[in-house]
Figure: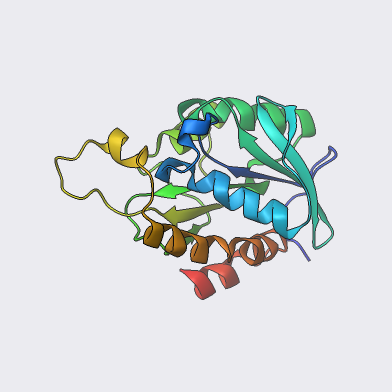
Length: 197
């Protein structure tokens, strides 16, 4: 049984993959969240193509939980605009918003699940926390690797492309995301954290 509050709207959970919409950003580190949400959609045989809430959205029923899958098209730094619009429309509580995004503090192929937390310097998460006024939402951090050296510009790094080997590592992590989402939506986030962190 889910430990989360039920939404009063049409969806119980909002599952958000963060990234930038332009084709030129498609293969960048900053779009790891987009890649993960695409994998979840593929797993549940659905598409994320409908335009709504400043996002591309799709629908999936995950272990009987009706979920809205979302890729904000606001650009990373304004991701919260899309999240808040969908939350408000469907009356989804912040505890039922699950966000997948890139993390430069983790090696490629690693992932980390958290129940809540700070933005950790990530502008997409920062905007979601700022516009919702809350940081208690589950998140799945996808490792995209540290900067090659301390002086390397952070923006240049997150907007750089993965190498072929790195992409294999990222895909290994992303393959686990559908199962993690199942655990979280069923209320077993601790089980997911113990298994994958």
